[in-house]
Length: 469
Image 1 (cartoon, one colour):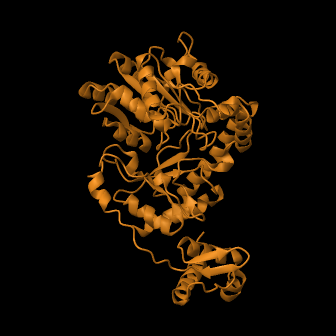
Image 2: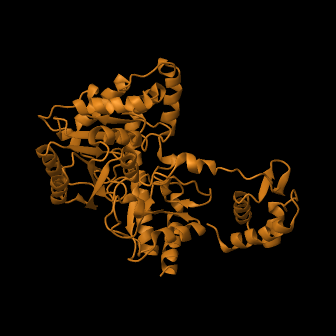
Image 3: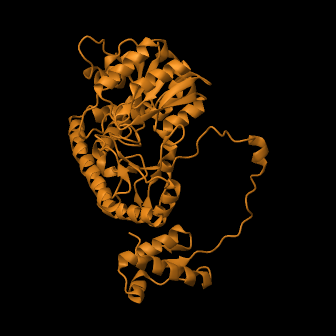
């Protein structure tokens, strides 16, 4: 927490630094603690702020000094204006979830679990074993490692009812993360200039991939239990769209999980219109109070293109995912992926397969479920006490995020900036809407680091909301 003492020490040191010559030695932390009557932790936080601002530099074993200002000729990139032309306005800017933040900030903006929630020992051992195999020195097949294809196919087949032909290993395409697969699927299944139905709100990366593929988005409102099937049917009939991108399980950002009857109704609507459902099962391994029921497990005639990623549950360093598709759709997606990246690293595939086939993998998933539940409930309870203005309509049954509705008229971007000045990083909700936002929202990731600071985060958020009226 950045308290008043930290701010005061940092402010007074800034004044001193502004008058000191470059290279002047800064008083030691011990001397500053005695001078200000502050704890070593408070002094260290103040020094960290000055170092982040580039005002001081530490020399191990010597001390801390005023940083010398470097005078160099400013770089001139004006020539690129003519060379590049007008920017592609349809391509969104870098997401707020991808920002780097100060090390002492409370980070609720990211889309990834904290390191302590990942199977680190399994991953490290798997990478070491994979490095000793032929996968470290050979090229993987374009569609992926056969054993890993078989594993993904088997996972989906287990969820299928009796009488439905299960997917085979050949139906599986291994991807370097589901994000790269989205662009290929949109290009191969939809095509530039063609309409794509999409939930609103939805995953910002899908909006980005759609912009890169040049498809035209048709937003469908989606609440805590998903979209209304009548809205889906009407959008298909009015636009002639050939595909619907959706997240039926623990949707990002609002955590929605479709009821089984909604999944069946949407699949029926897709079949009747000779269209596709692009099912993004990104949070398959992140269940808390329910279990995933992939719609693709009920499809054996190629109407569902299914995406599943291991990045969130295994490691962000192992960007391995899979697309399950049948018929010509599978061949078109494979051709697009091969043209863009040729193949996925066999080393990463071998390591990922090693992790998910270890007996300890299921132990990890059971432990992860309990850990996510504890973090979710802690953050939700803290919000209800300290920031009731940030209203979470429904407690998510899985996933990583709380989706909080703010009071009407709240400027979510301004709120995020105010929170950041107080040491809390949140993600404004507008970037999750493919059309106009239905209202001001923020997304809060309860799987991030330092869960013990969630009550502090809620206090900062509540104070910031009240300060904005």
